[in-house]
Image (cartoon, rainbow, N blue to C red; front, side, top):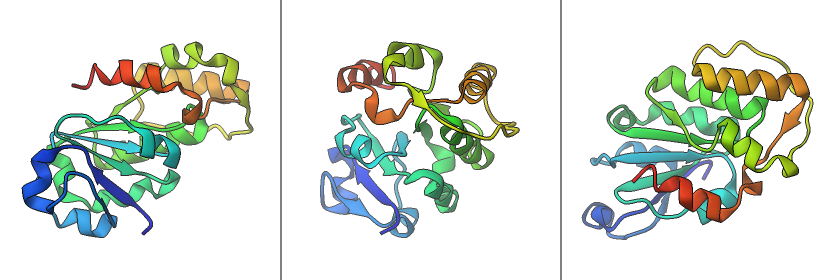
Length: 170
C-alpha cells in the first residue's frame, strides 16, 4: 500500500463496515461517499496519532506521493487540509495539492506554529522554487524558512497543540 486512508467517524460504518480502517488509495477513490473534511498528513507518526475529527478522514500522504490524491474525484466536494513539515518540501507539497484542489487549506503550516516550536527547528538545505499556489502568508513563511535554511518537522509539534488547533476545524 503506497497510501493509506483511515476513517474517523462512525458515519462511514454503513459504507465500509468499520468505524476505522485502512485502504489503498486506489480503493478509496471508488468509494461512493464524501466526508465533510479530509486531512492529508505527510508523516506516518502524525498520521497514526492524529485525533479524530467528526465526519472526516485522514490520508497518509507519504511526502510527495500526496500527488496521487489527484485521482480521487470526490475530493473536489470536501474541505481539504494539508499538514506537512514546515520546510521547503512541505510547502512544495501543499502547492502541488492546490494545483488539483485550489480550495485546500494548510493546517499548522503558519508562523504561529513555527514560532511556538522554534526550539525544535533544525538546519536544512532547500532549493528556492516558485510556488504559485501558496497564500501570501504561506509564501512569506516559505521564503523565510528557505532563505534561512530552516526546517520544523511536523512530529515535533506537540499533541496538545495539535488538539487545540483541531478545535478550529470542527
